[in-house]
Length: 236
Image (tube, rainbow, N blue to C red; front, side, top):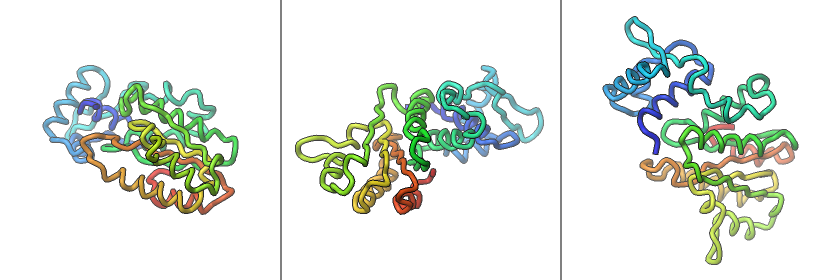
């Protein structure tokens, strides 16, 4: 479980990683993270003393991330060609999905075959571990929809489990369940996945990830599949 100090520090990093300009105030952070203002103020003072962030001298006091400090992009996403150029926006969204306050956001990755969708999902998993969102032993479980197509029963058993075996959701507990090639899934299985994802968002917030984070990839062969997931997944 991440400490409040880590949550505040990650929130500051996320704010500036997404290209926001200007500092952020204690009140802003307090409201965004649903934390007591006095606790946030104490944490910010400690981060300033440690040299991890800077602050202004005026009123209200505004806080900034120090250049080059605390940015996990270089560790997690630097293996991706264009991570700081043509794909910079993609990396920002991937980070935002992982670091979203309270619970990471289910994500859809859309692109043509061979564009590195699975690789990006694996980097998201790596980033989640490095930033303390997932435990170090969390799993990255792949469900490749090409292996099932219209075989609805087999897909349901593999995803959700049955009396004989646990499914991918159970295997990916506190990690990422990567639904690859979702364009091959039947509409029924897509609907069951979406229902499970929505139920997971309503789980007890005391545990950040009682359900795995779902990352879906699909190409343009079946636009309806993308539309189904994008209509309910916050990041696409």
